[in-house]
Amino acid sequence: MNPGAEIEDGELIRLCIERNRNAQRTLYEKYKRALYTRALRMVNNSDHAHDVLQESFIEIFNDLKNFRGESGLFSWMKTIVYRKSLLHIKIETRFTDFDPDKHDVEIDWQDNLTAEYLDKAIKSLPDGYRAVFLLAEVDGYKHKEIAEMMGIAEGTSKSQLYQAKKLLQQKLKELKP
Image (cartoon, one colour):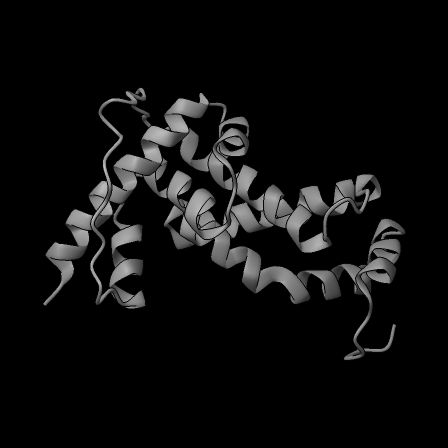
């Protein structure tokens, strides 16, 4: 491999499966920031996010031979990071049951919302709320997919998202100058 040369994901996968250390380093360097950012958003702790990233790359390198290409490489890797992140927070996470009558309310978001305030508010959410909010609203997963990933009921995912939005609304009001 030529250092600094851009390499296609397919070739990178092939070389990583062959345990080529340079290819593994290239794959790691190519995706580490984006995957770390997702882990950090989920676990809300830098040390834990680094642990999640390390555990994720171990699984990625071990399971690349099983990557079927049904989704893009980054999407596949991102799913591994989310699963590892959820394992880190699952022990501390408490979920509430879903009551459809109680949750059929429109959330009133502020018009002057900034990324900085939203980021602070998201980081301050309880783990379960934050995880479901990020999976649903940031990465576009459906409640059924979130429920499967987290080992919870689909209704619980809906409830967590509703509660997260409600709490975010409250926190954003508190954070505004």
